[in-house]
Amino acid sequence: MQYVQGMPQPAKSSRTPATPDAPESAAGSRAAAQRLKMRRELAAAAMELFATKGYEATTVDEIAAAAGVARRTFFRHFRSKEEAIFPDHDDTLIRAEAVLNAAPAHEHPLDTVCRGIKEVMQMYAARPEISVARYKLTREVPTLREAEIASVARYERLFTRYLLGHFDEHAHDDDANDDPLLAEVAASAVVTAHNHVLRRWLRAGGQGDVEAQLDHAFGIVRKTFGDGIGAGRSMAAERPAPAAVSTHGEVLVTVARTDAPLHEVMRTIEQALKER
Image (cartoon, rainbow, N blue to C red; front, side, top):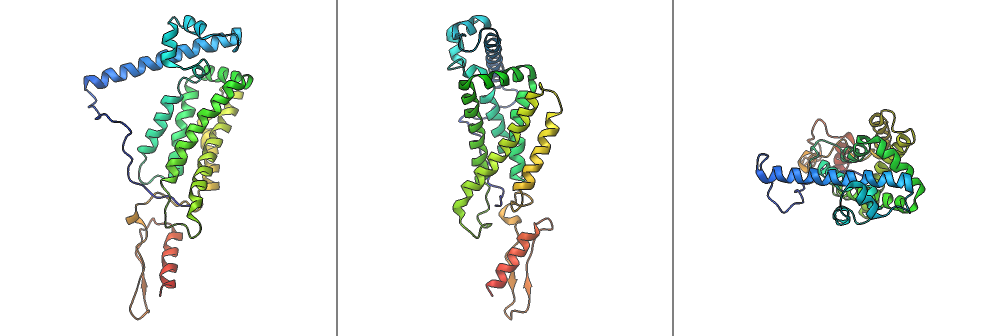
């Protein structure tokens, strides 16, 4: 499989971006920060109660009271006590998507996806004590484990869509219907590598250089799935130009960038020879 640079994706917002010093931008940032602060406070209260009373015995009213807010405030932020265990996933998903949308043209799509999921690791690493406690709890409560699996699936779908949008339609001589399968397998490999490192780090109590471990795991994924994807995402104009053959069939000329992958250059030449 091979990926190419697609057209830049517009930000998914119906609002016109405000200038950095616009009052509404500052107000929006404050509101978002307050929202995240309250979600984390509710999650921390929930975790403490789950640890002392047990998950099943803890009620939403008790979580709200422990956080010093009303029941209705809890439900403005979470739909259930299960959801309160994962307060940051919505915002992290948005940040991961922003990484994909802002990817530089020269970056390999698989590397972009790896950078995107690092947002998830950074979310866990920012509060290791909470992350470790949450990991232990999710191992004990099937409902929470299911919620965690659902969160992972959201990242996989995001990365699958991104990779599928960067396939090179000229790179396949066989069935192009395999593209969705290849994109999903590659996205799943990145997520699986991330989760393997994350679980190992959590079992170690949140100790160790988790980013170095993650980079090592991504290197394995790239080595396994990178062959045939290409040295980078190239615009159509950056691929080797069609080879030209003289009218007498004596000379074949092709033009290619110096950084073009050799297999692309050779494929262009072979195709031109076949059409003689």
